[in-house]
Length: 186
Image 1 (cartoon, rainbow, N blue to C red):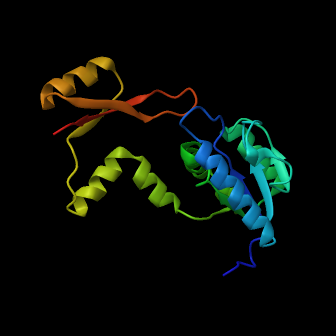
Image 2 (cartoon, helix red, strand yellow; image 1 turned 135 degrees about the vertical axis):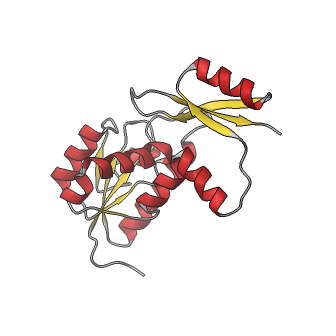
Image 3 (cartoon, helix red, strand yellow; image 1 turned 180 degrees about the vertical axis):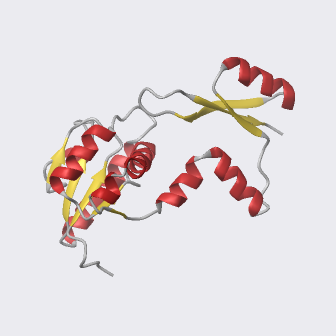
């Protein structure tokens, strides 16, 4: 059912597309923008990659090709005053930005509602400790894991749980420190 209390929706794109990553978000985001416009909503789009289908001027009512950073997205929110934010079409980039916007107070300040997945669900899915806690509450098995921020920490934990292990980035955003997630393979 169409919401008549929402007039303008800000969509966060996925940013740069590299081989094997983000093209699906460009397609999904493009289709979502077209559908929202068809329903009569004004669509504002921010994406840092001008070489996407999503940034075509026919896809959204207003397109910003700017870095997807707290500074730029906050500026656009204050300027455009959208009623709602749709971050789930921008993959990890959009989800991370929604969390940053919430933590900074911009969403509350400008009275912007997050559509789709709630911020609490995003936080629970993105925070490895909260996700592990949820899985344990649901009695779902999870591999032994830890989040470390140094190579030595990764080696120490791998020696503790035994090999083989998977080491992958747990969280990266801009210039923030990279966390490594180690998972024990059974």
